[in-house]
Image (cartoon, rainbow, N blue to C red; front, side, top):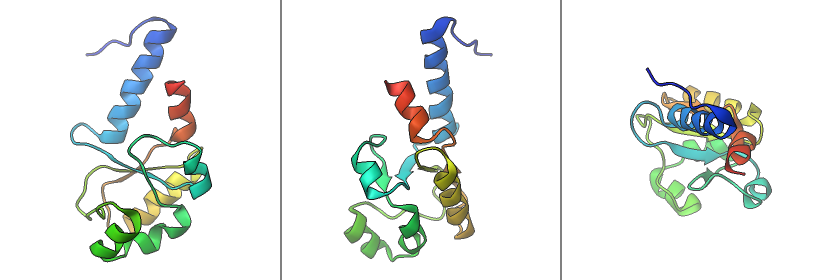
Amino acid sequence: MLQAPRGRAGAALWRRAVAVRTMAGASGRARLFDVRSREEAAAGTIPGALNIPVSELESALQMEPAAFQALYSAEKPKLEDEHLVFFCQMGKRGLQAMQLARSLGYTGARNYAGAYREWLEKEG
């Protein structure tokens, strides 16, 4: 069993490792979706995240793959994708996005409960 490192720096490292593992699951790579507004995402986001505001998410996830690609310059997630991680600033919109995605059949949808705020604190 893994032991958490001691000290403040060790604790931060441990929390980050747990958060990344939670976001990606035990295996595989997570696809990150920033569901905040375009303005919020433009001010800073988790590297590699695709910004789709929660207000657009339902229509985006129902688009044809070619239309999704054209609008977001990214491959549309597949229903069977395992690690689709939604996040916002503090957690509420991310949870809403996860629930919406699951209702559309994306069973691998997850919410990064710590949200961008937690990620930013760990990066800083």
